[in-house]
Length: 206
Picture (cartoon, rainbow, N blue to C red):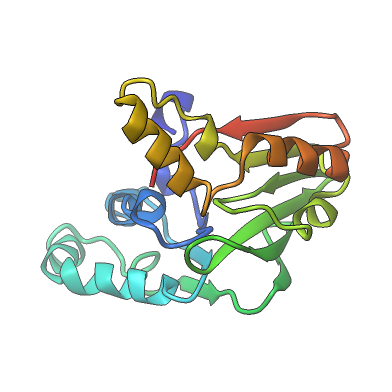
């Protein structure tokens, strides 16, 4: 974000696909770093699976002394860290709501724990984020006609630095919780992206 000139304090909406550490471990730095200066964030909307409220509360509890110092000594307001924090925990197969003029639709997808894909629609354009998932026939209809689909690209990771047997074992186990490249191709074809464009993002293998 910093390389593109986006300051954490300017971001007021954070959406979690799921609560694995490679997807939420940076929350503490984001939450406090974006709030902790005079021009910082004063409103925060959090969306995610059950556990999102707990993640935020743990942050408040663990860093209570730090937050007390910043509010009482530095003079930062409570807003955006302890108050003005709206948390929406997702439940069920799908939900739809709006943030900052963007219609957001969610879809529960299969992974190793509760996980959601997101679709963002605004101004006649749409972007879909798959999150980590295994193949599901529900995803293509959910992403139908999107301009851009961002897929979990776990199985695109290069395991060549590992011994062959270890690489084979890891890939075999990952396929139990991550969509394969041929399956991504099928979903992309079925979803018919408006611009015939899909972005596959590798992720830490976990």
